[in-house]
Each structure stands twice: as structure tokens, then as C-alpha cells.
Image 1: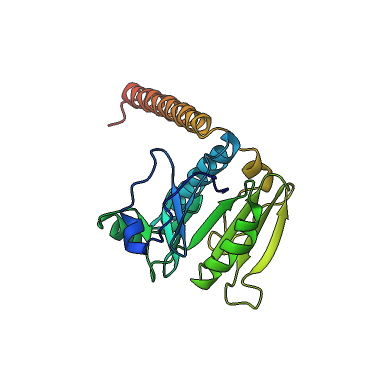
Image 2: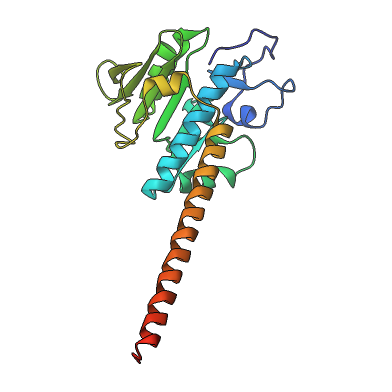
Length: 240
């Protein structure tokens, strides 16, 4: 995610002050070593990608009966006075409930490390590829995705303890993304970079569910008719 260039307070903030900071309406801020960094409004494609990933992750968690959650706009503390807002995070349900029980901004503190972080690259690509990569490796986020619509690729970074601050695997449009945290996730790079609207996917699922219910109802009626016919035949033959 790119940063916006607008005026912010000149004084440095502590992490605790940042948790309760109320800035300009409609602007989200990251904290980097005490300095507020305003975030730009995302593009429509950027928003669609994030919503699509959250939707796919949530379906995966439900299918696998995992007590995980996928969230946007959640903070992740990366240094003493630094906190990032990844585009998407995946973490345990218990961890997220603990965050919700605290006052202030919804931020995962030290020792509350997400299992998965996703950044969708915007104008300031160096932040996602270099700076945030180092920060997420520092707190040992197990898996970090860099989704890059401009370069038509997705990087999946694992093993934050490696010499290069993560081992990297690159996936192109024709590839299916391979995730260590979500090993059976059936998701291609092409789907992620040009996602359908989540609203349309929900409608499609509702239609398929309705069609299935109608099919089951028809099968049930057919079975009941056959049972009635069998009872009629048995009655005519005098079978008790």
C-alpha cells in the first residue's frame, strides 16, 4: 500500500499514543519509528483484490474447520515504535478476540504475530518489497505475500529466519499459488490479479445453494412417490 503525502504532527509518537491517535477523518496512519505515515486511498482494483483474498481465506478456514480469521485494516506492531497496517492478515481467532477486548486501535502487539500477511503493491513498491519485508521478518511472520498487479506476479515469502529475510517463490499468472500456511488453497495468480466481485460470488453461491435445495426436494418427492407406489402394490397383493 502506498503512503499519502499530507501534513501530520511533527512530534514523534510512542506506540501507546499511536493506539489512541485520532487524525484527519478518513485517513489511516501507519507508525514508523514514531513518525505518522498517512496511507493513500486504495484504487478500486486494490480494494477488489483485498476483498477477494479475505473471502477466499474465510471460505478456506470454514472448509478446513480452522479457528482462523482474515481481516483488513488490522495493525501489526513491528518495532518498538512502529506499527504497520497490512492489506490482509490471517491470525488465530483467539488472538483476534484478545485484540478486540482491548481499548484503542486494533493492533497485534509483540508476541501476537499473524500467521499470514498480504500486501498489495501500489505506487511506493519499495515499502512492500524492502522495508516491510524486513519488518515482517524481524517479528517472524511465518508467511508474507506480495501481490503486484503492475508486474503481474505474486511473491510468497516464507522462512523469515533465512539470511535474505525470507525465502522467496514467485508465481506468475498461469500458476496456482502455493502456500505453506494454506496448503490446499486452490487459487491462481490470474484470479487474484483480476478478481470477480465478492458480491457476485456470494450471489452465485446463493443460487447454487438454492438449486441444490430444489434438486434435493425433487429427489425427496420422487422417493416418496416410489414409496407410495410400493406400498400400494404390497397392499394390492395382500402383503402385510
